[in-house]
Length: 287
Length: 103
Image 1 (cartoon, rainbow over the protein chains, first blue to last red):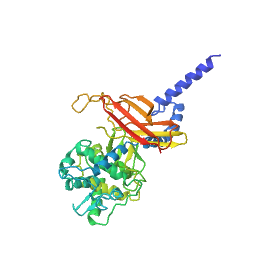
Image 2 (cartoon, chains in turn cyan, green):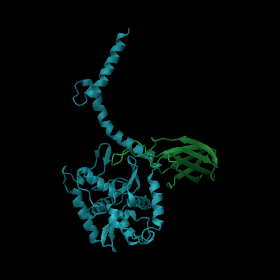
Image 3 (spheres, one colour):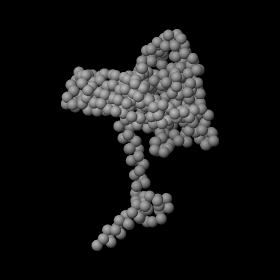
């Protein structure tokens, strides 16, 4: 009696092929069944899988290597003026690092500008150490002084890990930066007619397998603005918010914004103020 | 001089979990730069761990190990206060040793 099992096997094979090949058209009733059952369960399990992957890697987040480097750089005497950054004012007084990150970008009296962490570090490196800020801003990411900047950002962000974002909005300049950031966020343009809001204007969106945070509100602890700077496993680099924004502009096929330019800082203010109360997990870990 | 490693060794009864984060480019030798020229291979080849000077682990690594590699292993019989030393040697002959105390 070999025939019935063989037939059953053939039927099973046909069923398999049906689920793989006939999914869009659903040519057979049998194929439509399994396809319809598996489709809804894929979305949560993919997100779960990524969460599991992050949890496995979180124990050995290589961002720690950048933090260690940044801590040493903060105290290291460098530049034409032979000075350390220990007197750098990040908004909470000269040399105060802890808690500074969750209140940036903010307005600074000495420069008369609203500055994010990267642009503030550029000011400090120029004023205290005599380094050429414009030259550093022109340097491509991941090269030369930019590597030092990444390490400093990692260490300063880590000093505020677990704290909640509370960007100041007391000054008119800071509210103006928020308004500018909001306009930039919703500004559509480029060959794709894209805006930041196209991807980040509503909850539950994703690109490929990555969940996209809704940045018009607080997307939650350690999500969106509260997840950066972060170590990217795929490229083995530490990405600051400036680099993250730069890549967002690239993905929209916009011209690249200047490093630490007004519009990038304003976008930081917009996202940061929206994320008020969110817990910072930076430096985070990204795929 | 290579950047330092981050080593954590945590004792839990008889079992000690050692976690090591190494800073290395781990270039495979297969990639090309912007000018189309092959980037020469540069990766860790040997890793060894010693507990109070006695070797407890050796490993041979190749180009398939990720950039900034993370190594975790368990040690039997280590006590708080013991020294765990990790050494790596790359294919350029460069080496780095760091030590941590079991807590």
